[in-house]
Amino acid sequence: SVFAYFFLNVLPGVFGMEKRYFDHMQGHLDGRMLNVERLRFETTKIKNVVLLAHKKSGKRVLFLTQGILNTDGLCVASPPHGDSTCKEAFFKEEDTQFIGTAVGENGRVLPNPVCLPKADYDIVLRPGDDCIDVHIPAWGAFTREICAHSYARAREIFKTLYPEKSFKAFHCHSWMLAPELALYLRPTSNLLAFQRDYIPYPTPSEGEDVFVFVFGTRPDTMPATRAGFLL
Image (cartoon, rainbow, N blue to C red; front, side):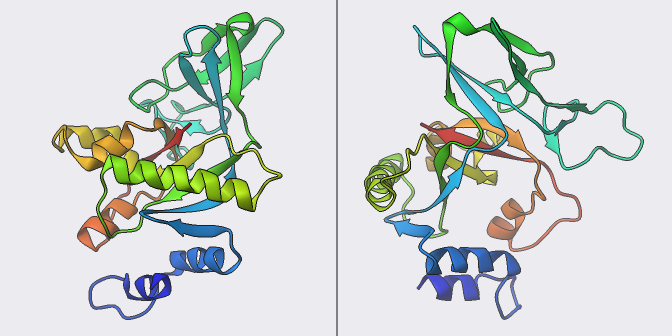
């Protein structure tokens, strides 16, 4: 049924399979990707972010370790020709402090570097840590409770399959995590409930998924997208 879905999920009037689904097929064949009830999961590693947690309050602060940022606080694949306003994300661990490009609650990077005392914060996620990538098949109910059950079962299954790994978080890269969706959807929306389980951050993207999955077509210009972590 998975392969049938990939084969049929193409643009209206087009028969065949979209190129981007081949990696999904290979993931199922080599056991890297598994459907666990409502959601689809695969093993991966943390990239380009560091997550700090306050030792007393538990407050979390996410930093980008690299990436090109525009003045809107979003990541782009490359700066527009002649644009000198873009800047590079960074993160440094110094003797007494952490300093770098932090992400605000709206999923956009803050305009100025943030410094935090090392004595007050622990690193809970860093590049190279094992995590579980989340994919959202386009069928079935999508309540928060159903997703939570998938997460719980995935934790059990991946812990059994990969006892040598210590999975630190779930990660999802999707247009469905764009905070701007709150401007258009009801507060009770299942999609917004899904978002609230994640810590959003900006990533460069072709940005076409929302148009392909929702409208079945591709626009001429592509916006940035979001990713996020669920601990």
